Structures are given as C-alpha cells and as structure tokens.
View (tube, helix red, strand yellow):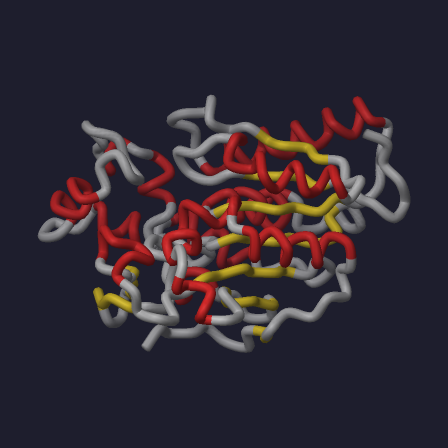
Amino acid sequence: MYVSAERYPVVLVHGWKSHPGVWKRLISRLEEQDLAVWSFDHAVMSGASTSEIAGALQDYIAEQRDHSGYGGPVDLVCHCMGTCIARYMIEVMNSHTMEGEIRQLIGLGPPNNGSSIAELFNDSCMGDDIIRKLHGVFVQPGFDPAEDVIVQEFRPGSAMMKELASAGLRKDIPYRILLTENRTQTPEFFRWFHGKTWAFSIESGWKQTYHGDGIVPHSDSFLPGAGFDILPADPRTLEGNPEQYCHFMLPKNEEIIRKVIDYLTDPQTQPQEYCTSPVVDS
C-alpha cells in the first residue's frame, strides 16, 4: 500500500502465545483508513527472550522500510507483552538512535510493570490451580511456567523488567495505554476468575480487583507520563456481551479499535487521563 506523508505505517505486535490473526478485524478497519499495515509475527520464535524478539522486531521494521522505500515515522500498536517487546526495542536497544522513527506507541492491556499472571503461574500455593483453570483458555495442557522464558522474564522484579524500568520512557514518543475494567462487576466479564483480575505487588502480595481485563490489572499497566483510556466509556455497554472487554478480546473489540484509529488518524487526540505516578488498584 502507498504510504503518504499524512498516513504513517502501523506496526502491529501481538502478545504472548498469540499470532497475527488477532489483528484481522483491526487490519480491515485500518485499510479502510488507507493506512499501511506491517504485522510482525513472533509466534514462530518459541523459546526466544524479550531481547531476541525485540531485535527481530527491529529487523522486521527495517525490512519493511527497505521493501516500501519509506523512511519516515511509524506508529506501534501492541497487545499485552507485545507492548513491552516494542518498549524494549525503543527504550533499551535504541534509547538515543531512533528519534523521529517512532511517532507513538499504543498498548492494549500491557504488563508494563511486570505481569501479575506470570507471577501467579509461579506461585507455590496457587499456581497449579490457576494453570488448570486457564487450560485451553490462556495456556495449553502441559504448560510449565518454569520452562517458559517470557513468563520468567515478565515476572515483577525480574532482571528484564528492572532493565526496562531503568531505561525510562522515551521523551520524544507519546505513550497511549488502552485498558478495560469490569465496571458492572459482572462474573461473565472473565468467568474463570468470576469477573475479577488477580493483581500482585512485591510490597503487598496478592489481591483480586475489578480494575483489570481478567489477565492484566491496571497496576501492571500504568506508566508515569503515559496517557490512558479505560473502557467501556459507558458501563451499560457491558450489559450485552461483557466478555468482549476481557484481555483476549482487546485486539478485536470495536470500542478499542475506534480508539486506536482515533490516535492513528489524529495523534493530538487527548486520552481520558495521564498517569502521574504508579497506581495501586484498590
């Protein structure tokens, strides 16, 4: 697709144990907006580390630039851990060398501060039960968190998460975080956890909250200085199909898609709020 000065390419980065097919609905809508789409596939990189996948993402973007002849900024739209892959690329690997190449980063349900569910998988008391509950939903039979590189790297307090936190956000790139929450406290929102999300902090341990998408609590996502939107804007939207707002559905959710397109077509679009400090779920 032709890339114009007004329409920048959109780089899509899917999440853990996912694939580019989750973007099918969004891609259709982006093409309607005459936006070029570069969909990065790291599903084939089983066993790779965060840094290895980030390096592959950087190579992919370079290849797409060579193929299209386009050398200007791109927008990054990422789901879940894909956001941290992109952040590792721009904050750790290229903290001073990619100015002007990334216009904005939009993360859908990102575990920016580490993943509570990754920590829960490793919990000696609750881990096995949680894994059983999520068999066929989020993990496959036989899943062993100790053998999964990404699960270990995304635990709060891991060396990788400390490296990402130490690098700091890029001052030249707007960060946009799109989140959902169970505003009606409906069990069907994420029925495996009765509508709630597990949240973990090193200081206070475990609790469950409605302020999350079933997999990622808001406290995992918030970054000081980043703009964020919490959806649905109208809680009555959850009356019909509340499960459409859980973590797995974020790339396919129509309200999320509309918000993504708003940011892509007008980067001056203002988020609901800006995060000024780390937020702890209540």
